[in-house]
Length: 173
Ligand SMILES: [Zn+2]
Image (cartoon, rainbow, N blue to C red; front, side, top):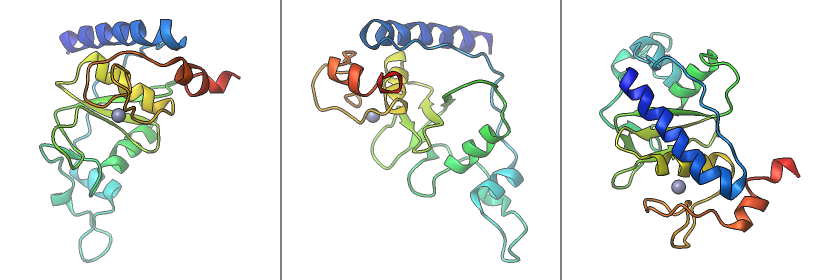
C-alpha cells in the first residue's frame, strides 16, 4: 500500500508538470485509504439488480468482473454510491485505480464518468493517462491534433493555448 501511495504521489507530481505551466491548473493530492468496494449486497443494490421478488439484492450480479464495465451495464452507479458516502472530504475529482476497464473497445487505460465526479484508471496506466482524464473532468473532449495531451491513447502532453484559455480556465473568467 505504501509503495502504491508513493507512485501516486509521483504521478500527481508529473500531472502538475504537464498542467501547471501550460494551463495554470494545479492538482492537490488528497490522501485516502484504498477504496474497499466488495459487498455484493450493496453493489447489487447500487446496480438496481434484484431477485424476482423485487427487493432481495441479486448478489450474483454484485461482484466485479475482471474488467469493470463502464458503457454497457455500467458499474458507474457503484462508484457514485461509494462517493456518496463522502469517504474523502473536500475533493473535486476522484481517480479510482482499478485492475482493468471494459469500455467496449480494445484496451482502455482510463475513462471519465459522465457525472464528472470520478474516473477509472487501469493499474497499467501512466501519469500522462491520469493527466488526460483530468482534461476530460475539466471539460475537454478527445483531440485529433498530434502531440496534444487530449489525444486518446498517445503520448503527447501539449495543451493548446485555445484549450487552456477557453476550456480549462473558463471557471475563472
Ligand atoms: Zn480521452
